[in-house]
Figure 1 (cartoon, rainbow, N blue to C red):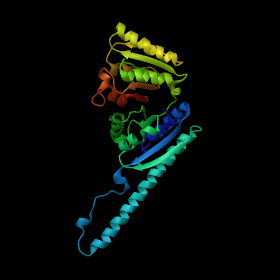
Figure 2 (figure 1 turned 135 degrees about the vertical axis):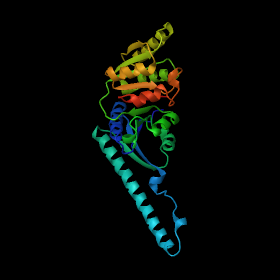
Figure 3 (figure 1 turned 30 degrees about the horizontal axis):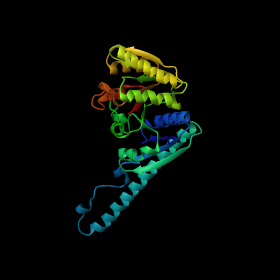
Figure 4 (figure 1 turned 45 degrees about the horizontal axis):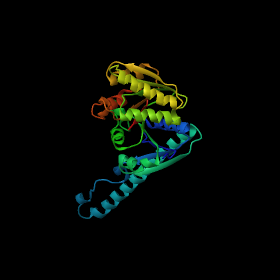
Length: 285
């Protein structure tokens, strides 16, 4: 059952602005509201090392008071910082259109928060990398990996810069998640009126062609006019070349499948495409 709500995750990183613009674009297409979450780590809320055991004699009481005051100040600053991030995110999304926005400030583990709240949204939007992006440009964010593993919802992975989405590339391998992707695209207002290309990498067999043709028929039944391509080669190489040079604005792929795509996050096609792709990636489970 649809909630008509998107969940957008922001952390104040360079990718958060892109998350907001993509969330606004998606919400406008879906006529949905956006819930923005900023989740503070446990240590941000004042969970600091207990130093009281190192305090001696008459200084103990005063130092304990100072440490307590410092903890309270740190917790207050963390709360204010979190609220500022959320208000900036709200302003970006509302500035992109007439969109209802709610904000949520939470403390704890991000993935625990997402899995607890995922039923309140239809789609999760997250940046490819988080606050450590400046020092880890070649790595996919660790929270992103954990969220994709843990959630049952589609995950929209925003790249660093937003641009309007018009041309969609759909990675198709005939597996369950690929079929789910095709069904989702056919039914979702996100893709109405957009250009969609289905690509299947690997051997050009009769069975592969039939599967691709059936997928295209599903999209046509949903009111789309898809193109199909059968490409020789390994999926990661084919998808990398097409997203880099084909003029596509979004890659849709299953996080799991019956082929090599199934091995998520351990040198897999999924991880490699998220890492290297210069366009957003929508992952279907």
